[in-house]
View 1: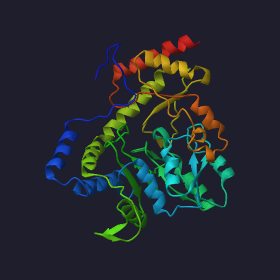
View 2: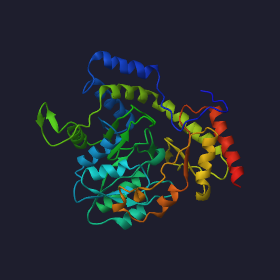
View 3: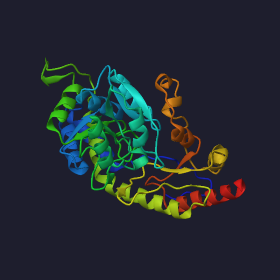
View 4: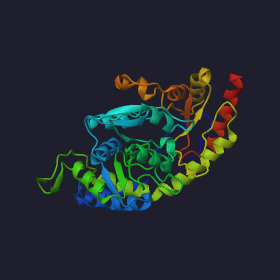
Amino acid sequence: MSDGPGTFIPIAAPDIGSEEEAAVLRVLRSGRLAQGPEVRALEEAFALVSGARYAVAVANGTAALHAALQALGIGPGDEVLVPAFTFAATANAVLATGAVPIFIDIDADFLMDLSDAAAKITPNTAAMMPVHLYGLMADMHAVHTFASLHGLAIVEDAAQAHLARRAGVTPGQMGVAAYSLYATKNMMSGEGGLVTTSSSEIAERVRLFRNHGMSDRYHHETWGMNLRMTDLQAAMGRVQLDKLPEATRRRIENAAALTDGLPSLFTTPRVPADAYHVFHQFTVRVPAPYRDRVVEEFKRRQIGVDIYYPLPLTRQPSLKKWSSECPSADAASGEVISLPVHPKVDAESLDRVIEAAIAISAEMS
């Protein structure tokens, strides 16, 4: 890809080629569109890559979160610790179980602040949901120590963290994690999700829950829902999984170039020494008085930037009933900007982004 001066550089661009087309066509010609071999093959392949023993495919990332919580027995009367700065699906999955979210502030890396979590725990708190935001894993050793101290179950929201790792641990390796395969994710199938775990019991509970609780044809062991992935989605996901290592390498290279080239107006993301950050987003901070002007200037230059997220969950109308004080999340929502970092951003496009940032910075001074 080569962008001329006026060519738009999108914030996200799914990498779909002849391999995905062939995979989908293969399924269409087979006549087996659902509950077939492609789903099982994706589950086996993703489990190997993820570092967990099991992967269970579901319809989308929200379904993965919901099924994981359900498998852990979370339900009415329970509270679940959720970062205040993330996509609403994390909290919505909690509500879907009948539990309620308790919103926790974030640290400087946009991850759940365990000190704030400790201050907000009550006798009804049953679980916590650390979110590996933008592709940076939370410190799961610290999270597990915290959870063990307080008797909490853990569901990792790894929707943005395919192939991420930290301190030798991958999402779900120490418990249970939920991934998204939405169209703009690092690995996608249009829509789709995966639950990973090394517990055979949890994996089986997720399998039952995604298919109306059926352990055998028309034998309903427990209640459940239709959260199934189609073979069309799974076939595309298998191709995307093969491409994922190279796509991730390019994201990391692009992130390094942006980190090196952006002027001081932009505070670039920190990568802890023990972390493999997979850069679903390259999210910078600029002082709040400049943020919206900076966004408009990038867009005027045909550079697709976006704000993830303009409101913390504590400020969302649908969730304000459970609002709490989260000042760092409030501050982040007024300062963050995500810049294009996906694999289709080539060297020429990176130069345009950096040159634009330098020019915009000069205008703001």
